Image (cartoon, rainbow over the protein chains, first blue to last red):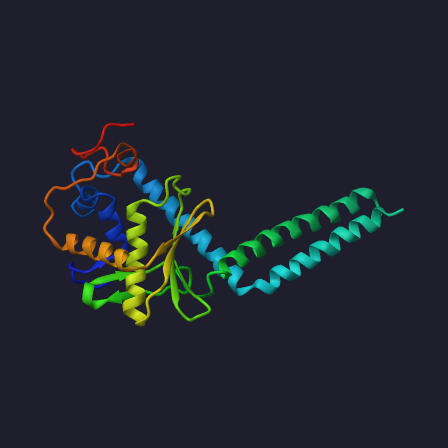
Length: 86
Length: 170
């Protein structure tokens, strides 16, 4: 991120569009600070992103593995049925 | 071989089959937006537009079959019933602007994907460009005390306890 304060990030732009006052508070925190649940919400958001993005990356990189697991699953079901057998 | 063991093997097979089928369905939907070229999980990319002093790191970038890049922004909340709020649209539009400025090729749209899997395509057109540049210009002006209170919004705002402009609770 550039040091120059005049640079703005896309997420800051979103914060400003959400509410200019909230954006101002974020840059100049008033006494009393943010609500207690703000940190918890932020952490939940970070965890969601980490989980969702790592999943997307895994699915993009290891597509063949999922096909293999699908086949193994089918084989196991068939084996289970065959073992119960006539 | 006991029937219980056979049942266990079949159950394991069903679990594997279901897990793999769900993953492949998701993969197929994600791949409809093209190949993954960057993701904010191990392979992030930071985009910069000197001209607008704008910087950003989309959650993911995918390349369509025609070579154009599409930015994707994830939101943990469920999709709003009345469509994406302005702030989300502005963020995706900013990523579209950054992609255009960085690569020289405009994306056709950006994507907003919510926690419940619902996706919205945000068109990147003249109106979107005008909108995002207007917000960018507004941020360069000294803060004049403006606020945009709304009951639903203020109820979820982290600054609701100290804000003197907040709307009454819904």
